[in-house]
Image (cartoon, rainbow over the protein chains, first blue to last red):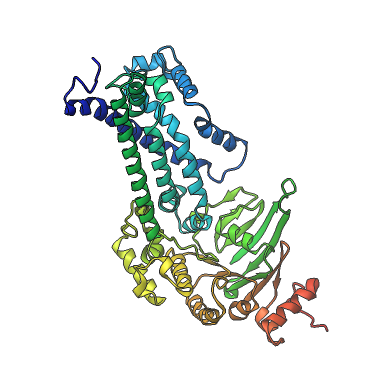
Length: 236
Length: 273
């Protein structure tokens, strides 16, 4: 049944055509950002201030998703986790289905979002005064402790900015999600997909409503980020 | 007591940077501290200090401190910085800006306290009670008792220096390294703080190595002077005695520098005009 404004009560309409995609977008972007965060910060820590061919190669690999079109990424992901993909049989045995599921959308968003977090974390970590890390070492701190108690807190603002950027990008993710998870209303249809869907179907009211909601959420995010960063500023 | 022989080579890379080689050997005994490494910038003083602290790895040589061997190129032994128990006061003091004075000083024992800075609870990490008392004692001794809750950005240059010294001493080092301790301070403050630092150093039972290019620092601190020039070093034998035949430490150092290789192992410089 079509969710048109004509045959539904306003509350139902709001629930089905706005709340579902919004909740899905927030969930997918949030989880993807969280998963990427751990990996990206660790990768940034391992590769920061390293020179040589191997670190340069790994750096390129970590940045690649930023350069590749999302559809290409989606294609690669299907090659990896699709039913006939490299990991497909193994995943099927474990009872995990990523293709055409919201978990698959999380995977797609994680990969898309990773370079944004990695780049900002790496830049922030490299800006930490190396003397401070050396000072911690001479005071008996292990590399792990230097990272947790000196590098990470001092790079915190840069990493926070990266988190916001990644979350926003995750909210707007379209191409890779469409390839991997499809466009199933109520299951994998995120805000970005729902807007496209509504627009294509000529449901102008729904499209406009979704655009408005997306805009408000994004403005709210930006303002939160600004506030958090300002607060950090005044304390420094 | 402190025996050092270091070789390290930096080659210019694709026309960028300059090639530099450090090749120094010196040793000082217990009574000869504080040791001052004197020389212009780029002569290898800081590199020597970094090698002593374990922040740079030499190509060859050895570092022996008392009965401990910190580095031995021949045996492939190189203790990491955290295991050397070498206190290092950096030129810019390198205080942790996200921790208050007390947590800076007690950093050597606070576990993951610094992480609280990331979640916005600055300086709330737990310090074991006994260590807290020890840190507070140390701060009181250096006249910083009222400042334990202050953050580095709120401190004056002189206070920062004292906090940096307290932080290094809190870890109970076996050797203290001071990199240009007064470079970050204005001239008026220097004279006063030299006396202060001298008093503190005299109360310590560990050797101290100080880097400087200011003859006034040599005047104030040196029991032993090691001259650095383009990656080479030579010990000025019996500096305090030699100093007495000159109007100032600056004159004395200039003389020793121009006398060059005439300073032999024997210990006496032949004063020639």
